[in-house]
Image 1: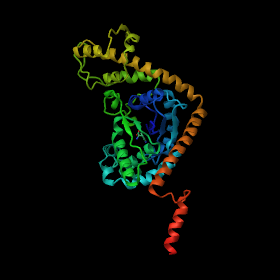
Image 2: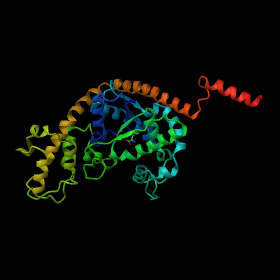
Image 3: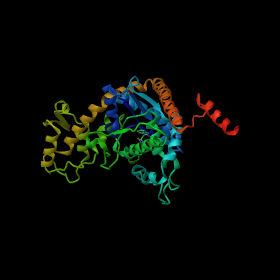
Image 4: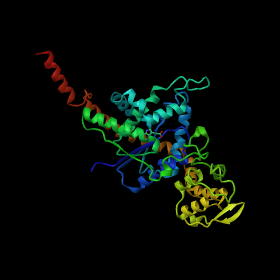
Length: 383
Ligand code: TRP
């Protein structure tokens, strides 16, 4: 059996939010602790973040530590997982350079995530006011290829990511097949690992918009304080037609319920058998289905459900907050973890790069190869 290897990562453009957590981070920690994997690489994708932040490297630089702190707070353990910084593994750019020849511009143009992200950033619209109207940076357009380099450099078999990354993994698999059929079986075709809970595939923002994103200001961050979480849940989007407590309500598309689907565990019902709505009242439900039924029938107020959600979120976030505080006191340690991890990642990527160059026969100066080349060319010119 081949080795089981994980590679995944995040762009350091801000602190991580609960969408990152249920989309991938929580799973990574479980996989790490399952002991089922031979290697786990977790990458802070600073170079990828620069593809659309070239004018703001300081933002990326400052967020490396934020993401690292969030990782450690969530339970990633440097003894079990290799945490590293993408830009410190220069082998990745070399792989990227060779893979660029295996992908067409037309194929990239069809990549749904690239398409959507170009639109989101306004790279292709000419609006006067648009700060991005100069167009799409080439590096940004090509980042799926760079992401294939990230994944294949570590011979990753498994990539736990959110649903938005599906087209990236598909693109990687195509590159692997193309490489292997052209140059020989060197690269490993990775599998995507999506969240098994549908509400975790893409957690909506607190405003009900499809995506949680910093620029929309609709995120709950892993490092938010208790008060911030409370205030954000209080202002959350629910069912706009559920005006009175007695009114029947809709659960589908109701963000509060989507979050409960993503976070609520059976033990929470015992733990939070009462809720605060100005005063302490009992919250006599034994399962999320019971809560939903009551909400649909009418007679369950938004405030009650929101208070329950707040309690559930606090229960998840409080241990992380506490761990983060500890690591914040020891920043040198965090950088030491990243430095060591980057070194280790570099050694692993260098091995793959050597395999790749050997397969492409561009390893001219490797032992034995040069002798053979000299012999071949000498014969050619001295017959
Ligand atoms: N594109 C990912 C994101 O936006 C980050 C990333 C870069 C990544 N390289 C990767 C994820 C390789 C998985 C595997 O969050």
